[in-house]
Amino acid sequence: MRRPFVVGNWKMNGSRERAQALVVGVCSGAFGLPEVDIGLCPPFVYVGDARAAIGDASVLLGGQNCAGVERGAFTGEVSADMLADVGCAFVLVGHSERRTLYGESDDEVARKTELALAAGLVPVVCVGETLVEREAEQTEAVVGRQIDAVMARLDDDGLARIVVAYEPVWAIGTGRTATQAQANAVHAFLRERVAARQPNVAAGLRILYGGSVKAENAALLFSEPDVDGGLVGGASLDAEQFVGICRAAG
Ligand code: 13P
Image (cartoon, rainbow, N blue to C red; front, top):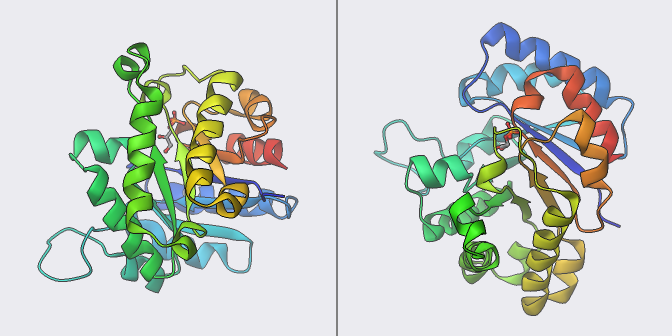
């Protein structure tokens, strides 16, 4: 049985005060949900505060991104090791905003995945197609290429430690979510792709759906057999909404 995982990605939103209030709200909701892994990705500068506010609550902290290199003269970058050092348990890699706005290549995402694993973090590898790609029936080709690039750099042990997030670009922040069937079809495709390499890993692989997940649509999406939780943007900026989504995964 795969344990559900729901991650809130705040992106570049909030303030120190708001971050604190959000963490406190999510932690109190998390007490009633021991069957769900709950994660939060605050902006880097609030990770330390969030760590302190979480205390003993079972909420995991994650980075929204990490550098594709280990250390050195890379002004403005934050390494996977540093994220682990300040109490992160996981990190998003290859979010579509990183791929499209910052030009991250499939191989760079794969390299970040490797570095995250080496730092002891769980990489949440994001994949997804644009609207143009979906309309051109390229969805499987695109997400297949994205997951293959990551698999090419990992051994089976590494592969067994990743989480995948399917985020169709056209559903991110648009209010337009994939239907249950659309989401599950891509999740099943990704699981099969991993199964072709390692069936046991594929069976245990958690694949999260992201793209306009709200408390109202979460239960239906999460009821699909290959959907193991969610990666939530906008709705994670409201503790009550986000806890509602976490509850739908339980
Ligand atoms: P929204 O939930 O705002 O669509 O964002 C999804 C996302 O990009 C999470 O990483």
